[in-house]
Image (cartoon, rainbow, N blue to C red; front, side):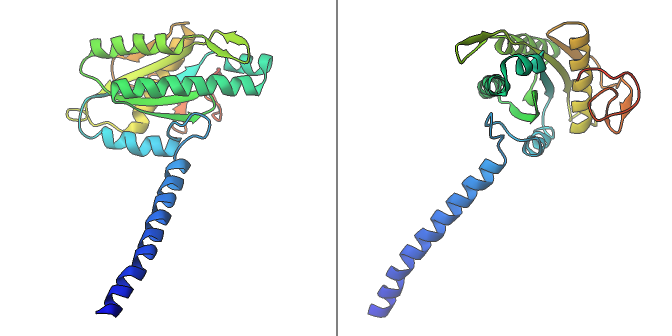
Length: 217
């Protein structure tokens, strides 16, 4: 009996050690899925979570691209540019909590989000609010920087339409480009029909594509 009690007592530190190891491993995995600058999901992590949300209810997909970000970097330096990216990430994270959204940083100054949407009016109202959130000046290093973003959006209902996340991101990208070209804060697609030329699954003119008119993306 004493031997059994001793063995049980000896196993407690081992179990605690494994539990601590598992907890640390889980934190490392979670950290690897987060963008180190903003704390948002990375592209792959965002994609996995957004695809799960896409299965069950009407949603809207948003693509956000900061305006004149290269100008900020060139004028004030990369540290200030990073501060603007970080502030944008914080604003999107807060917006995500209020709207039940999944948000990720796709790279550079480009972000994506997916959130439940109940109607076209709901989507329009959300775009207005999101635009206002992102247009708040950023204060950093004694500077007050005016910032803004071009936002593209598309709504879809997986219960009645056959939709794929990559296609929705592609459409949101088209609308983002349309908003920027028209100098509007946002634009949303009224249908799931692609309108811009496509090169290797991306809008023609995007960085990394060839053919068509090259435009800022």
